[in-house]
Image (tube, rainbow, N blue to C red):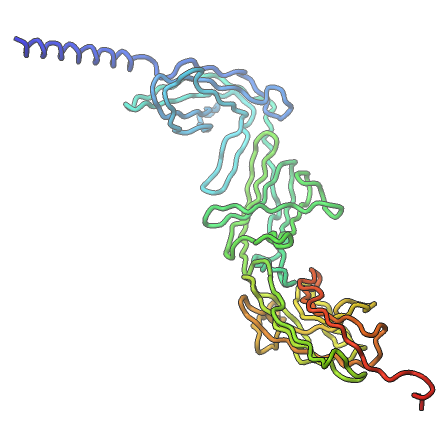
Length: 425
């Protein structure tokens, strides 16, 4: 008797639950739909540029929102996005007439032309039941002109941002056809983005975002002392978006090689002067040890270690002119009225350095972790203007800065015969 009663109760419970479930499923999935205003003018004038779409769901569902034009073509604003059953005020989204036209990684968005459309909200619940609710929507004065980035490209697709003066920078140019916000960046295979800032200042062609020719002078951030993006090949991206949401993307490729902040130091220095006194006409010898303790090669240029200067010479008079980005070891003195560090030597002999040919020209590099010994001489031909005087060494990164300045100051006296009638011939 009891088991029969339990069975009857269970049967009634199942019937009630089935009835409730059927009743729930029979209720509309989408409700409370509104699109306001029903006429918009998406032209960025601040009046009726967008419409507010509102809807509610009675059950969890995948939701699509699209517009159907006069020819029956669908233009998706949202496609199969999972949404939970509504609570509170439901779902709200603004629509300004722009449809995403992206393909893969290529981002594009376009404004729909002016005209009359049917806006459809379509939802499919977890049981596979699909419902639609339609509302009219009209676009007038739609701004369908999208910004173009004409002639986008770089002057060379491989560069070495390491401040060695050889392909340290890359020039990026494009012509913008419509006022827009433009983002330029590198993106690697890992998806990390590295922004690139447009040139600004008195030499800029036009202001950022304005119609016209735009240019970028990219050095990977090394000029600010920052590490550039890791070596590798990147996608160079320019993405323009106008005031109504039209988007246009263009891409190119850019390879970074031997990038990094150059770092070197003097780790040892010897002055070969007896008792800090040197006879006039004698040669003062200096031996230094220099180390590249960074992660990128540094370029150097002559004259080679072992070169002997006379006191009336300098590196320019020997034919080794200032070379922007090159590193050299140098000697200077306190009362020198002329060019700083006039006596300079390369950081190593050619056979100690790595040679690299760039654009038909051979450059020499001190590689990371490498140490070299630099020896040089200075023959003193004339008395010092101030005697004794303070001599010191330096490590010069030319046209950048003196990395190690006034290292190991040494007071040197030049022993010159006294002047006077007793010393005249």
